[in-house]
Image (cartoon, rainbow, N blue to C red; front, side, top):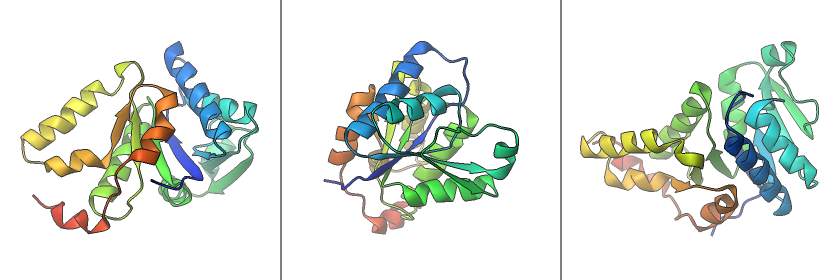
Length: 195
């Protein structure tokens, strides 16, 4: 069982996505707050980022945003965040979010979300962190990526054990139980990183 005080959520900043993604984002925010888990996120005020923060704050939770200065200058930050941490670069943003979080969750998102998810899986594969990673596959959004992961195993780009680096769920209410019940990941697994 994992002790969870904070969860990083990677998700879309687009406001044009399907309603199902907005519903799951709001529900996940609510779930985090109801279980006294801090939301660590990219501090966006619109799209799924804004919606998950709204869900969290609606139940009295804490939404902690991490955002590069150039995005603040564009007005992309969320003024309603409980706390905003302004950093200088995108790399610093990712490192800060990973450092602050006890677990990571990827919701539907674009290139940035995919990049964040794949980097945190890369770090886990290399034993640089051992935190739970959950993919919230709302409405089958990640089916193609998950099929690609399977192909990587088939083609000997990954070992089968690397499929245990993450858990896949379909609904927001399943995220925290998945985190709590995910098997411990041993940092010494880095010896399996090379095929």
